[in-house]
Image (cartoon, rainbow, N blue to C red; front, side):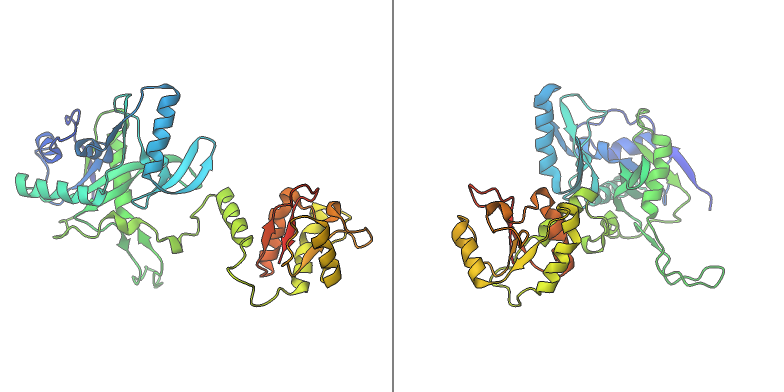
Length: 362
């Protein structure tokens, strides 16, 4: 295979309502059937009017950008300082939902196309029907990648070719059947196009020639095939966010009474796993005696009378508000330890006016 990557200069400034097919056909009359057209999503967004007005600078601009980001976000994946990695309504996971402030007036922000696959299909149809050339179209944008520095262009939308080259079931030269290999060829082609488009050269379109002998007769399923299903995503959250979600889940008590009371030994193991870290030298014991539990309920305002198991400080110390388990900020460790033992729990805040940091009801 011999590939050529050709720039399409001369397109110029793109405004809302512009006919991209006409602009591209005029700038590249040399297009051939079977070429792969790589189009920067920004000019697609501009032509489709996917722009919002914001203040040019100052805190008002930041506030307006945050509002726009919230509207474009389906869920937050990770947050570090001012950086927001989010999943867009398209399913893409990227910084700031792909909102861009470069190569546009300072009082405007550019959003991603509303439906990049539909944009690619429309552009392909217009070039074929009005300009007599049958090409595949990739709508591309720049993204970062987990675990790797630097950015690269990837496909947000595609028409006229498959997004993935599936090698599963093929046999390599050594006789091994390929089990997992699926190549995101449209991402590779988008990255190839970016090599000659650049960020400051005002060349928003590139042509990759030689990869296809002919486009698909139909448009294909588009770049949506590249979006990994959430159930298969092993890295769907940032580290801190995943920990917080796990701890929250561990601290949730199922609706209604627990049908099977927790095994006291399981609770003791959970306590033992964290006690020496949280409060070295302190002995924690389970309070199962009805009389002792009634005493706690009467002595501490707000203590949950319905609790079936309570935790108390050292048995050698008289029970009082200051003797209740005081895990404080380390309640999260106890949540995790209980969850590891399969014990559902609800961590309660301290009753008003007591010195206890928290109580645990099981």
